[in-house]
Each structure stands twice: as C-alpha cells, then as structure tokens.
Amino acid sequence: MSRLASTATCITLAICGMIAHVEAQTYPSRTITLVVPFPAGGPTDTIGRVIAEGLQVSLGQPVIIENAPGATGSIGTGKVARAEADGYTLILGTVATHVFNAAAYALKYDVVKDFDPVSLIAFDPQIIAVRKGFPATNIEQLIAWLKANPDKATAGTAGVGSTSHISAVNFQKITGTQFGFVPYRGLGPAMQDLVSGQIDILFDLAANAVPQVRAASIRGLAVTSKSRLPSAPEIPTVDEAGLAGFYFLNWHAIWAPRGTPDDVTAKLNAAVRKTLADQSTLKRLADIGQQIPPPKQQTAVALKSYQNDEIAKWWPIIKAADVKAE
Image (cartoon, rainbow, N blue to C red):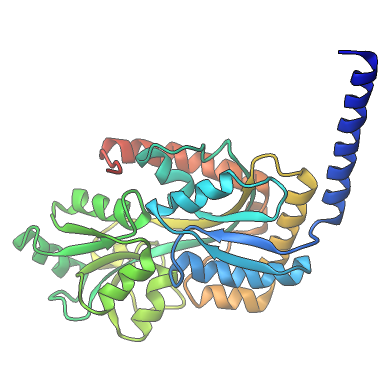
C-alpha cells in the first residue's frame, strides 16, 4: 500500500470513529424498536409495552414494539442478533430465548456472544392452571386424575424449549404423569385455547394467567414460588398445594446487538433504571405478578452474570431430558 493510500485509510478510519462517537453522544435521535419475540397479547408483549412507555419518557424518543414470533422466540432473537449495533434495535428476551433455546435448538447465533446486556427487567413465576371445567380443583386432584387417565389430557406450550414446555416436562418427571402437548406460537394463543376449553392445562407465566384467574376464566391451582403473589393471593404456592419445591422463575431482560457502543448501552441502562423506579410502572407490573430486581441486579454486568448462572443450571437439565426441536 502506498503512503498516500495508507494516509487516506487512516483518515477514513478516524472520521468513522468521530462519527460513531458523535452518534453515541447524541443517542437517541430517532425511534427505537424493542423486539418482542412472541405474539401480541402474551406475557412478554404485555411487559414490553409497559417498559416501552417508560423508556419513551426517559429517552425522549418513540419506543415501538415489534412482535416477531416463532420457534420459541428464536426468530425474533436471531433478527436482533443480526441487526445494526447502534442501539435502535433491542430485544426483550426471557430465560427461554437466552438460555433454553440454546440447549434445544441449533441456533445460527450465540445467545451470549452475539448480544450486549442492558438490564434485567422483572422476575415472573408461573401459575399451574387448568380449564374452568377440568375435573380437578387442586394440584393433588390434578396429579391423581392424570395418573388415572394417562395421555388423556393436553397441555399447551409456547413451543419446544419454552418455559411452559420445560416446566410441563419437569412436572411429568416429578409426578410420574403423562399428557400430550399442543404447541403454539406463544402463550397468548395458548391461553385463548385454555379459556375456550380447547386444551386442559397450561404452565403459564403470571403476567398472562393472573388476569384470567381474576376473571374466573380459568382455574389457578398453584404458583411456582415460595410465597403467594400479592396480585393473586388466593392461589396457593406449590409447597402449600402439595408439590413441594417445584419452583420456577421466568425473567425478562433487554439486550442490544453485540458491538453496541458502551455509551449507548449505558444510556439505555439508565433509562431502564429510571423506568423501574417509577411508581406507576411498578404498580402496573406488580398487578400482573411481576417482581422487580433490586437496583444491584439492574446493571449490565449483573445481567451477564445471571444469564451465565442460568445457563449452567438449565442446560444440563434440558439436555438430560433430551428436549430438542424437531
């Protein structure tokens, strides 16, 4: 390379660096897209819309939700992994999209290496629910009926490797029961069929199930946490219901594509923290059974550490159960 060409290359790189720095300083200057990798109306969509409203106020720019469902969230997640790393396309992921899927699917992206963490958003236990007319009013009756009627009941799932699927598989293993699975593109459509009586059981997230339990559209038998939900105190814990230790905690978090400027992820993290400190936002999330992480867990570093811990916990369980997408 000639000295002139070398100098021109250096100047070009310097200009690009200056532009990137200026863009990071002025971020955000246009609409931000928060991808929800599940259908509209489901729990992740509901949480995403609450968070998007808060981020919009904090960042001073529109924050829109884009639903990109399919393959237990891996289609939308893959889309964000391939997006430009400028902070204008983000993913609202879950334990399914950023932990479970990597053990059950042959993904074209890496759930850790291809994303920059922004912040944990909320923790969400499950509610073990049945259709309104199902012949069981508590967990012990449910287990007894399933044992007496193997493969007669159907449980909805959001697909192979989803939270609803992994919990149901674990439930079968622990209780010695057998029932069929009906996959959906998300928990929203699965809930619709539970309400209409098309399926019998759903291991659903509190954000999706609590409103239906309150409306008496379905029957909530137990919550998969150590304490009852303030938003649905009538539902017993799994310990109280006779399924001791059957704990499950889903979580939601925001990531940006790998390579997003540090200044940008710092601004996003600050906006999330401000949103999660807003009392009206906290109430809206609490009303659908969400538990907000303490401030020390709202850092990007904390999200990265937590995700790695969850991978270490769940990958061996999923692989031992031979849970694989067809």
